Image: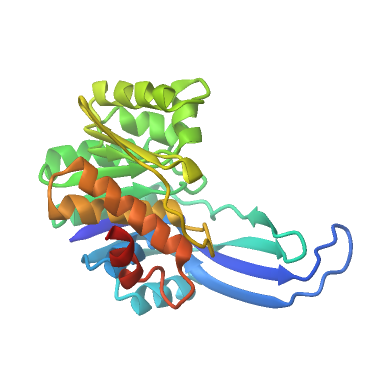
Length: 303
């Protein structure tokens, strides 16, 4: 079992316009909404790739779209109910310019009691899981060290569980001190942590190895169209981006996390895992059908 933790699920609402006019009246040509959030995406990707996934965490009252999407993807869920409304992320797409504008709401604030209950929930599931994925933003009034606290307890109470961290900023910095097994920053996020721009592959390699020395076993850095780099000790592997017809980039990084865990669940091989991660991200970007990604596409890209 692989458990993903979501304290900040969302509803992604995509609105398409023939031409979007700032300050004017705009007619929506197409609208769609679905449950989302990074932990939700990772769980859907894992299940699509043939792994058993569970998504747990906090879900405000109107989270039906999220549970329905997880159920449609055959993902188990275990959420603590919370007052307030699920945040809505609006994605405004102008067909004439092919420009996407995003407007993201904040999560409703949480109480200290709910934060503590979510921590207990994450640790309880870690005891039954091979991997625990900590990803996404944290709601207002949730301490920035929440991921760090979960990591500390998992090391003590569920040492068999390997923790994956995909976060940024202070959440990332504090959690890294607790030595997650794998981190997956993108190039920009790693640069924030390193305190300098990372303009070359050598810059990225140096910054990734610095994380290894801090106790993070595996560091995977996604670089968009420039590919991805994975580092473990003295071993480093680079995989270029795949040449595909891109239909979406939303959730590609989350699909990479799912693919990495598919690879590591098969064998402890860094190159194989990075190939799986890259193929999974590409399968997400190429997806035009129902579901988060198509396993058939992933298998084709792996070949």
